[in-house]
Length: 200
Ligand SMILES: [Fe+2]
Image (cartoon, rainbow, N blue to C red; front, side, top):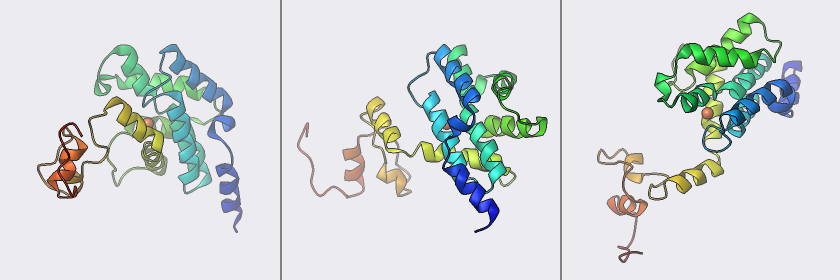
C-alpha cells in the first residue's frame, strides 16, 4: 500500500470536527447565534458533510479542503435565515465574508482559501465538467449526508403526506408529481395489489 493511501486512511479515521476544532467551534457558535440547531442546515449537517468529504475524497489535500468546505457550507443558509430571503437572494459577498471569518481559524493559504470559498459558493449547482476536485467532493458529500436515514425520517416528519419516493416520477412517467399521497402514486403504476378502504 502506497504512502499516500496510508495517509488517506489515517485521515478517514479522524473526525473533521477534531481536525479543525477552532473552526468547528466558530461554525457551531454562528449557527447557535442564529438559533439554527435543527432542520436541514444545522451545524451537525455541516459536520456530517465535512466528514463525508474526508471519506470520499480521492486525495489527501482534497480531503482536507473539502472537509473544511463541508464544515463551512451552511454559510448561505445561515444568512438566508438571518436576512429572511430566498437562498438565491443572499448576497454572495456576505457568504464570502462569513466563510473567510471561519477560515481565519485555519492555517490555509490564500490559494487554498479561494478553493474552499469557491466550493461553498457553487456547491448547490448541478454537476459541471469544469468542477474542480474540492467542489466535486463537497457536492457529493452533501448528497451523501442527505441520503442518511434520519434525513428521510425528517422529511416524513415535516411532510407526512408526501411519499419519500414518487414511483411515477421515478419511472419517468410524465404525470408524476409530488403532491399526491404515496398510496395514490403506487396505485397509478399498478404496484398496489388492492384498493385500500377509505381512510385506510
Ligand atoms: Fe448541505
